[in-house]
Image (spheres, rainbow, N blue to C red):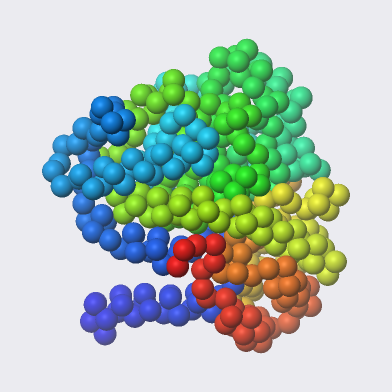
Length: 421
Ligand code: DSN
């Protein structure tokens, strides 16, 4: 096979296979045809280096660009900013970052000095790698201080964490995480942030769609100074990032994004993000509501089937995620691999009682319902999927046999809902 046919074959195999899968990776989603049109549009070939210059006499945003050919894109970027500011009730939006980790790096670059300390959750407790020295924070030489964590609540231990912040005085207090079942204590940490002159950065990558749909907390209203996110998890946009912030941080954030970290941003992403913002403005509340109903239904069904689903006394979850401790069933690596053989795609996950050495085969699996909700699945399908997971993980049934049931279940669900298509 020549190179062209080889790569086209790889793309076609991926499309064919993933159409037959139930995808429950908590950090992914698939986009509508309209978002897809934006991603594949001419914007994907273009440059728009530059920065927001201000507003003209009609109030329209004016961008200082270094390239010609951007007059329509300027309208697109302006619309993306206005819609973001409206939907997230933010004083300013910067849609330049090309991923969630880059959005975090933009904030670090803007609001911290090299060598400062930041505070966040450790990775086993759900912190994202970009909150630590091994990723974006390390690029800025930032040293992280972990919070105290309450394993029963699967949340930050507020009293102990206030003491840690008072003593260590981190420059940035990070909230939001990757293993994210319940809202984080933004309000509760506002006073200590003021007392220590720290900035609260809320990483909403996982829950951006739930926030847009008004079904999770409102971080900016509750006291966060800055909210960062990727745009493609519960928020059903193309892959990219965003920073939302108070007016007083606008200039520093904009300069950190360009020319600080990005030369050209991804114009097709901004266009696709705008389409997804319009979708969420209209359909977001229903979409977010169903995501959470589906998570609760899946968690309840798995629990009733005997799996060790975390946080039963708390109703399992208030987000798109369901977390199961599978250490008694062979561990997260084994279960994730077995499920993949049955076309059920999830990921292994460290749990708060794991050390980083357990990364290869951690105790947990993390399951997300946002993509299946996007293709129209509801509580009945969640119960069916729970049965299929149990047959593999608990009963030891052959994944290859279960795969036929998964393909059959998925057949009716290949159209995107909660959109204008
Ligand atoms: N690792 C993914 C997560 O947070 O789930 C995305 O960075």
